[in-house]
Figure (cartoon, rainbow, N blue to C red):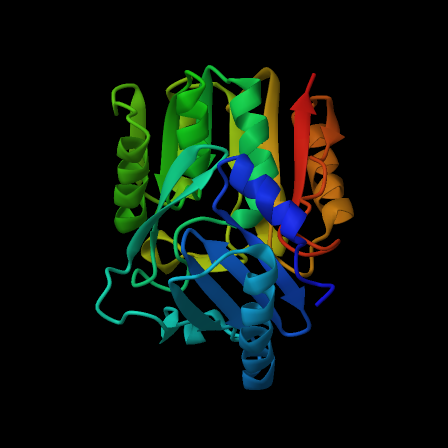
Length: 302
């Protein structure tokens, strides 16, 4: 049970208006709380079943009662990904839900595909963006636009780019959940690698840029994207759009790239662009063990 978060940490999340966070991390499995629901992500049936059994013990200690439990298999190949499956709870209840993170509201949809709508390991980076209060934010591979939401709440204009129109529609819904008008915010359903040069040609500049690309994908015209091969190209394109003093988030879930590799790629891109910069990482999340979650690094341009 020592890999489950403590009742005290759970109570702190509740007090901080955060209802989306990790509950448990173990070999071949992790458990997340999403509002009143729980999602078990697993690599083996045995790990899933053990986590489900321990969940009931943990809930009793923390004073939490989940309404539903979903499970999601973690395949080795992206093509094998499937949507979460309900294993306990009301099968007639809507698959849509709303969670909060430090009071910010985000929509969750267990029927939308492999991911429910919010990457929990980016919580500290979202908080950093809101605290920094940028004037203009560029959110690439934006998914459901969580970084755009926190920037908009801080007064920024935003540009959110993602190949998936459905994801951007969910991003607009997240704006609505937080009573944010869409004026001053653009949602571009297009290939990031095509959009960045267009923005550069128009002379657009940003003081915060989010780079959180997938490990592998297919873009416009079937163009292949492999993050470890193309991260430097992405960084160079982003640097052309960055104001002096801008902050760029570099993030990846690729197991071949750690923070040191991200910094090396960034330094190479800086040298090519003849720009200088410094780096920082946000403090680790208390619900994620060391090494879990995305590898992230902030580049601060001089």
